[in-house]
Amino acid sequence: MIKRSQRLAALLEMPFTRALIALLVILALGVLFNADGTFFRWDTHRDMLRHISRFGILACGMTIVIIAGGIDLSVGSVLGLTAVVSAKLSIHMGLSAWVAVPLCCLLGIACGALAGALIARFSIQPFIATLALMVFARGAAKFISGGKKISQGVETPEGFQYLDFPQLYEFLNAKILGDNVAVVTLVFLLCVGVSWLLLARLRPGRHLYAIGGNESAALLSGVPVGMAKVLAYAMSGLFASLAGICQAAQETQGDPEAGVSYELTAIAIVVIGGTSLSGGRGGILLTLLGTLTIGYLEKILSINAVGEAGRLMLTGAIIVSAVLFQRGRK
Image (cartoon, rainbow, N blue to C red; front, side, top):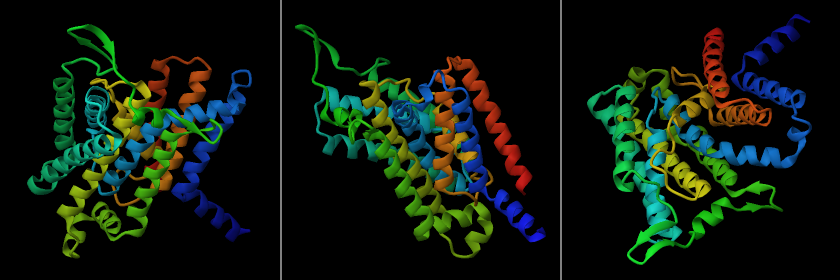
């Protein structure tokens, strides 16, 4: 009996178990407050997955950075910048997806690598470096767009005209498997798979865990700390750019204000999943559970007509609770 109790206690101490319990609690609330059966319809779950996917994509990059002992406050602004650039390239310039997507991804990688280089080469604190990039990327988005949304409607000498809707956006907005799964959800799952491969199966992933656990020890062990940090932030920028493309597709326009405060949601997802903010512990499967938890929480509040102010306050309270929960495990 004692051994069984000890095994149960050890199981409850596992981050995956705690994240799963949190998700099950939220699902139980959905069953209880189902808004006259709305929670039990599949389209409710499909739309939740579609909505939360871009936040989950951001959280994939945030997980990699946090495991390496950093933080990235710029992901929301990089999302807004790439949303504007994506709309500019796809709608106004009419470039194909084979050109627009790689260019946007390169832009995101460049932004992330720049932050990583500032942190690794000049020893700037991640908070400061990514805060500066957050401000710069938002300014760049407004400069490129002229402070206006990049949409199908444009003014020409002949009058106001509507441009063709890009095939890329039609594809990302599509639903497959009998309209049961959104394509953007599959993009999110692909990002989860790439992140899992990096963190769980490749040597750079082990380097990131080592740096987050003890950077000095990792350096003495021959880990290329500088390159690993640049990689972590470059991956975060890449995922932010993919989220920006999905955002532009869902909104059918490039909004320079897109992504404001999205970094809060991304951090909340990572923390609620159980990845330690101090670095060196966690994983992408925990982030997947955190994404579902936040997604269902927001959907349940939405179908029960809870206002945005209440949702934001509740999300903030959950972040604090999750951090205290982590502290209790140490």
